[in-house]
Image (cartoon, helix red, strand yellow):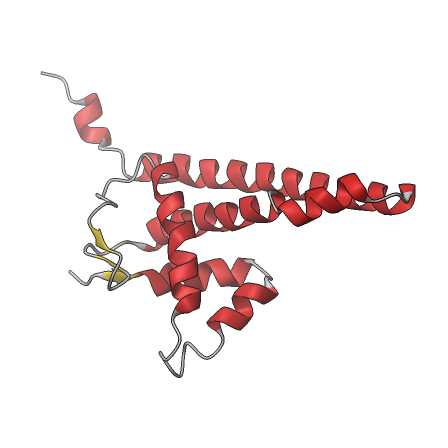
Length: 155
């Protein structure tokens, strides 16, 4: 069994997100582990995402946040589901960005207010779509890991 580092999940997250703040925090991680502030930042989102994966067959609390590893070996499906929930947590932060909400309230121009409101609405719609996608992946994961023989065993 090989422990799964958080970076394997973060790589999947970054493949699905375009976030310049995260990109700049994570730049150079492949070459130099000098600055791990991006990893620490993403770890918070991952930790918040873990409870959403409530049907995982493995114990996701078996981890070490200091070394940023799960003490268990996660399969690809588990990593993918965690990456989805982590991306949702990142998007949640974007939706609740107080600066955007304040700009929406304070903006005097109807055109700009309408544009900002539409952006917020689209982020909320995206979050709903991502949650549906994560839920579907979790359902498939449950079906894949169901012990069908035991379920239909007659005694």
